[in-house]
Length: 562
Image (cartoon, rainbow, N blue to C red; front, side, top):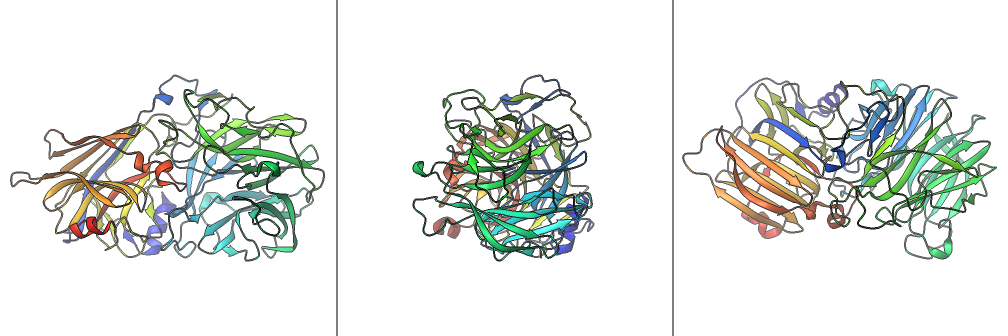
């Protein structure tokens, strides 16, 4: 939690322990927040020392990348336009993870102002260079500074360098490979030679990388143009990673787009610069060839990275999605883990025609009750007495002083930026990690004027659900493009005290309930369709973030569709 507090304090956005003071007319106090997940996928007994649940990181944790130093493993994920950026995790057994903080937790590292939600911080790659005992995260900030690298000697202390731009490197998905002889190489996706021949036609490129100057050198080398079968016109060859196995260089990349056609392909070469020969039985991971009505369905698998354990075994981390119907999912792309088998010198993550298992056997695991659960069914709550921990995110880089905690809860001040704009609204939230879950909060103050205070389920600027209060009503608002009022109940003169809000979500529906003080809960709306918050409807790459929000909610807003 230290790193998270530091990012807020350094940007001047919050005084986490500012003490009690009276509320301003533009402020709303929240007295607590609770979350409980109960997915059927996790309602089974497992041997926690020899089995684990997939996904290992539930909820919005896309594009996993992993590295190892000694017995320590480190993993990072994409974060797009959420802040802080690039969550970083540590593990000793590849299954149980503790979040260390964020790679980018200083505003000057990553200005995300005005970036659309399918832009920002794309797939990061984390690697360890044993030749100079340094960790690297190389990444793309789309519509921002482009490709860049940050470094750290010690990921445990949370101190990463400022971004070092890589202006010569175009495209997305850069990764670093450190060879046995001390040479370093940077791979990435970019446009193909000449003009693209079909939609989604891309190529993979390789540069030599100077670790002393932190820049690419020489001329780039074409590793793969289009994909493993150009006649099939595959979409978006991307996410490349290089490895060394039995003297050969292994090239692993995603192909087929990041939705249901997603897959992972493998190639190998005796030379780091190629030519690379594809595996005859590619793809080495996909779910696109399976029946749509399978149980415990996982879709869109790909964008994998592998790591070798000290005893010589290989494991692969990859993204996948858990639909609740057809290919609707609100939890976003999650992090899955499987052991790797080697066939003819190629890595096979999952044989074709086989479904990603919900439970996997891996002996010698190290469950730790002190770790915050990252998968399975769990519940947690906070009264904000100790501020915000690493679960909480803001939308884009926080600007201005609009958040504080005091002895009675969390206070948000209306900063004039609505949740539907491409700026930084007064919102903090956590990942939706289950399809079936309940969240509850208490609005412990009144709300003045056209202001709103309450819960927000945020997918992007045009797809969200609000449930809370104004100065005169309890309201539910949904955006699916234009903003629309779903339901409301007037606030009568006899309603005093705090307003409790509770939302039960199951699949693509939710029930919205409220209660005054210690009174009984009353339904404002039941069976509300939340498929507009799914990735298939909203598009983009992130999952739902549910949290607390205050901002303007006026008749003009509904008319303009803000």
